[in-house]
Length: 478
Image (cartoon, rainbow, N blue to C red):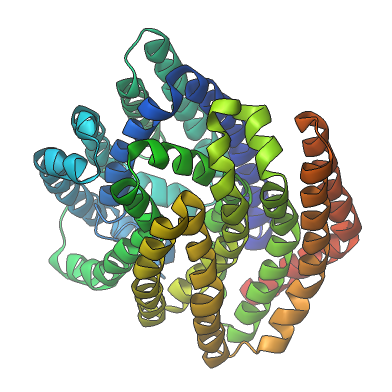
């Protein structure tokens, strides 16, 4: 029996990841709508504060060592026991710190009622650390089918628990309990798929920490770039405004989760197989960027153009203030998808200096811009500041670094020019529909139709690009 090639395994994994993420996000969207309507902006804002604390700790809790499994040039199973030991020990420490610091953090965010929710969610940190190595092994080996099973069980169980407890009157705590229940079920399935083995090898630990600590530091900065806007909105405007902003942020993240996340499950491992062939690696990156922008930008700009009718139709009139932020965050989502692929490319190259330097520059420029934007124009001002910094500070920095890595600007521009043209047209149609058509459902339908038409026009070019990408990966690994 012929053994599957790396290209076919990566392609199958990408397809399964797309299905997994699509089903998960559609389910999460539907459940999020229900919970937003049940809880309302105030309770939702309280949970947003607690979730922000959890995500902050998860961004660095396992010290970046699990990614070494994906990138390790030899058998990853020789390092897995040491990865597990480092991950669980560091996660226990950070969980304890989170529990102790919860009252201070929540007071600073203007939501002292979120303290108990933060403490419940902190135990998710230990669960995440325990399964860091099994999750990385599944990613390394393109076992997307098993990962899909785990994600679906975790997401749906957590959602059901959240809805039941929310209806029962638990308020913001219902979301915390549901998330913890889902994480626990997912951990059981991860360990069933890849049993956790603990061990310690001093030499391997030294190499892991040398690789992981810069990435952990970079992850802190990456997290700050992604979520500092929520810190600013919560501290400057308050938890209710944060609830509106987070709802818009979550909706704008839907294209990222559906399209970018599945690609990121596959791209680091696929790029890593091409490390020995720089020409093939550069070609794979350029083609991947063109494909990703062609699929995602029209969807992102539908959110921008049809923000008002979309929020009113989906979440109800109580949530319409969120539309002011969503108009800008849709643009940011498209930019972030591109940046995430660039980030993964430099990680595979081992250029952690580039990753860290760009993220630090982004954060330095972003913080004052967010404060100014939030003070001047509330949640819309904060979102607009985010977009401006991304386009006029971060994008030029990444282009310079890509050129130094051997990727010229011209092929990059050629790859994204047509998707940008079609996406701009989609944004204009969506914006016009939102302004002219009084019926929200009809306005959203027109905007979505425009996006589908753009994707249909792009279909032939995307098929050719996908075939080219498979050929590059197959040629680079043969």
